[in-house]
Image 1 (tube, rainbow, N blue to C red):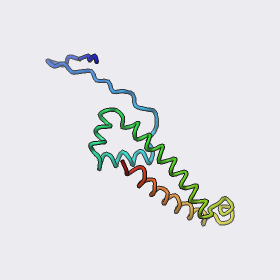
Image 2 (tube, helix red, strand yellow):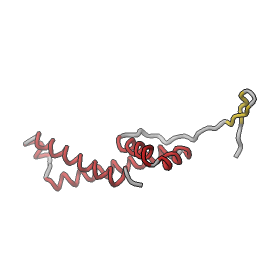
Image 3 (tube, one colour):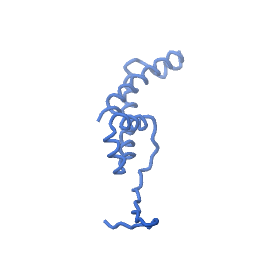
Image 4 (cartoon, one colour):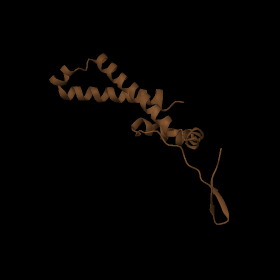
Length: 117
């Protein structure tokens, strides 16, 4: 590995260039994972941060969590009979049931994916 240095006064400081971060925006589950690692798994967080793999890891967890969330919502809605027909007949009942389903699915995703190693 070849290092270049910059002279700053009497000291030579290495020119460290970080690797490019992967493209993508962190959303709800990715941000939740980052906060969890930072607060409760600081060693893993520091290791990922120092190696430049943190954002890649967060994006991967976020993708898995979002896919699992979508599948759970679909399955729970089918199991509870929440359909477009219900939405057309009684919109407020449909909203209540869907909000309940989404909360349950999010809780499962947090426990299964976001807050585990």
